[in-house]
Image (cartoon, rainbow over all chains, first blue to last red; front, side, top):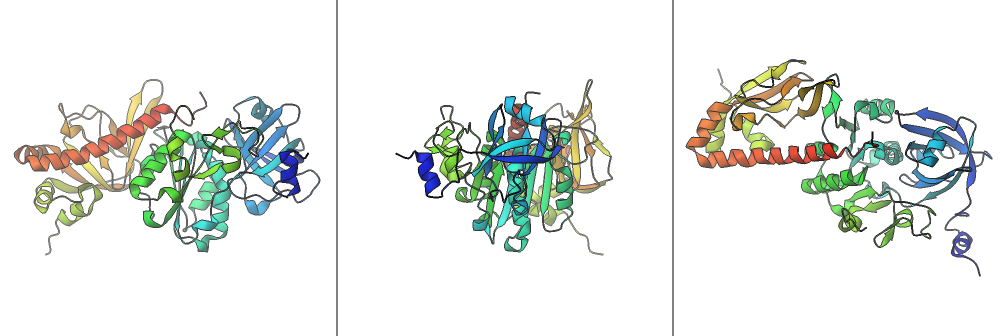
Length: 288
Length: 155
């Protein structure tokens, strides 16, 4: 009898979901002192797998292990993809030592995505905290590629210090455009920093968007996402138009192993992007 | 010559929104327009806190000197936000420095003038305190989040 994985593959839901495809590293970019971006292309020069903004891949460092990491590049650049990650454990430590030309195994893309298509005609508020900007970056690319379909687009980005700001050049480039509002804040800074200091939630009350016609995408530490969603609610943004990207211990990526169970849902399969109303009751609960 | 008063400007700010006309009139009597170039110290830690500011444009850094770290910015205050509440509480001394990060214009309110009016008219005092408690509540919540250091990697 066929396994569940084989059945899924047979009906075309996932292409060989547990089998990784070799990718070659084209570029390694150090973003901050502990965060780096890998640019990868299929080793066989094939078409790779198209992805939607917010989805993740399982990245396999051969002989070390596999980790889930969101795709951080422009969906239009596929099959070349980028992954931005912070050095936090054994696998990412080994990953950081890889160089141009080295190989990685990739499974995916997996999970749900930012519903950019359903947000046409609305103001878009993107709130990113720390490395949470990485999974939102593909959504920004997609929105900018179809700029005429949306009203105001506002990016509120908070991070720890000025040195921790990701994609600095891109942010400056985007900020130069007149059709995108970008506000960056840091939690602490020396007196030489000439911009905002304070938590990202403090920018929401005065951010320029119409709450009655806004879709919000939030990604960052869970505490930051909770408080951000609360501030957006105070402004009047509907919970079912507020989306967050959750992080849990994802292993199989297809909802079979159960490692990423989050109450009644699996983060890898039902998420990582959830509408806030679906999971609000689960956030902040110690036993979930 | 037409004399423009600050009353409609004050009334239109989110901070004072919903206040009765008679209270706005009393508050306006303690207000004036101010402008600061970039890099100007508006007040110093320890100085008499005899004013507060409603920022209309620009950016002000709230800073204090940390030994071995230097002058550190703990908060910036921008358009529509309130700078300073030490004028409300004895001994009416600033606890931090405030320095403009950009050219800034604001409404400055004479704290002593307003305190006197609040003592005379407790309804006004209640309205003022309600609004300032909201600011204090927001800043406390933000400070708690900053203390959690949620973006840190145990560094």
